[in-house]
Length: 471
Ligand code: SAH
Ligand code: SF4
Ligand code: F3S
Image 1 (cartoon, rainbow, N blue to C red):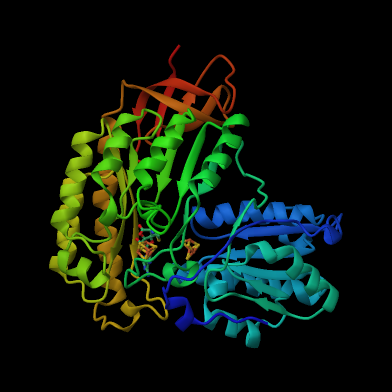
Image 2: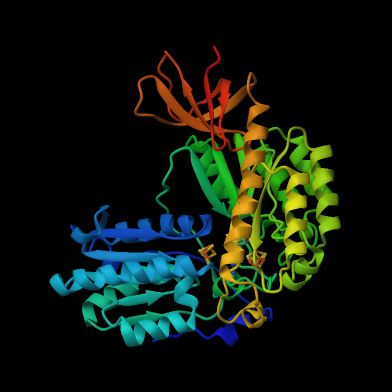
C-alpha cells in the first residue's frame, strides 16, 4: 500500500528522473477478455487525455468499453479535485456504485486521477468506502494493468498512490476519442502554486517532455490524417524551462507548425510567462490558431496578489493589448473566480470593468472553492455565499453580453470550419471555427466529417453560430 502525503507533494526539489519506455506485461495481455469496463472522466483536458491512455491499457488486458455502469465488470472513476462540486460528483457516483455492489459484489471498482492524490480522500476510502477495490494516482497511471490484476488475484484492496512525480514514461498506448482532433501532453505538473489551487499538489512538479518525443507523436498523428492537435499542460508557457537552456514554447510551436498539421491549439497559458516570441510565432504561422485561453482570475491587483498570480491588472492588460495588436483576428478567452477570500464589492467591480474592456470571446466563471491544504483555504472569508452567487450572476450577464456581441460581428463572414459531425436535422452539420466557435451549418451536398470547409455565417447566437456552406 502506498498512500499520498501532502507535505511531500508540496516539495519542489529537483529530483533526477529517467525517461522510460512503456512496455506491456505480456503475461496479462488479454487475460480478462470478454470483461467490460465503464470509465467516467471528470475535470480538464489533461484528465480526458489520461483516460485515452487508460482505455488503451484496459483494452490490452482484454476489457472492452460499455456506457452503462450497471452492466460493467469494472467501474473506474478518473476524478478531479479542482472545486468542491467535482469532488462531490465523484463521491455521489461512489454512493450509487455502493448500491450496485450490494447486488453485484463481484464488480470491480477503481478510483484514479487528481482526487486519488488527496490524502483526505484516500483516508475516506479506507474508512467509509471499503468496497473500492483499487486506487492509483496521476503519477503511476501506467501501473494500472498490474494493479487491476493484483486486485483480482488477491481480492484485497490496492492503494497505490505516489506523492510525487516518478519517472517520465514515454510510449504509453492510447485510444483517442476523436479521429481528427488529438491531445498531446507537452508538460506535466505545475510550479505556480496559485494560493487557491490544488493542481500543483495533485500533478507534481513541472516536467517537460523531450521535444523529440512530442514531435514523433505529432508526426504519427499527421500520418494518420489528424487535422488538429492541442498541446496540453497546466501551464504550457513554462515548456522547456526544466529541460533546455535555449528551447521554449515559441520554438516548439514553430517546430509543430512546420509539420503542416492544419490546426494547432495549446492550453493553458499562464499570463506570467507569455513571451513576445510566443506572440510573434502565433502571428506568423496560419496553422497556429489565433484563439488563446488567457485566464485572468480577477481584475483587482490586490486580489491577484492574494491569489499569487504574479501579474497585476495593468500588466495583464498590457499583454492582452499586445496580443490584440500583433495577432491578426485573435480571440481571447479566460477563467474568472469570484468570491476569493477578502474580495470586496470594489474588487469585484474591477473584475467587471476588466471584462468590459477585454470583451472576451469565451469565459469560464467560478465561485471560489476552498481546497484543503492550499493557502487560500486558511484565509478569512466574510462574504456570504448568497453574495458570491449574486456576483457570479452579475459577471455572467456581462460575459454573455460580449459573447453575443462578438458573434454578431461574424454575421456575413466566411469562416473555415473543421466538420465534427452530422446533426439530427437533415442536411445539417456542426464543427468548430479556427477561433473555436461552435458552428451549425447546412449543406445540400454531403460533407465528410473531418474535412475543413468554408461556411458563410448567417446568424449569431450567444453560444454558437448558424451558417451554410460557402461553395
Ligand atoms: N492551469 C490553468 C488552470 C487550471 S484550473 C491556469 O492556471 O490557467 C482551471 C480553472 O479553475 C482556473 O483557471 C481557475 O479559474 C479555476 N479554479 C482553480 N482552482 C479553483 C478554486 N479553488 N475555486 C474556484 N475555481 C478554481
Ligand atoms: Fe493552478 Fe495556478 Fe498552476 Fe493554473 S497556474 S494549475 S491555477 S496553480
Ligand atoms: Fe481537475 Fe486535476 Fe484537471 S484537479 S482540472 S483533473 S489537473
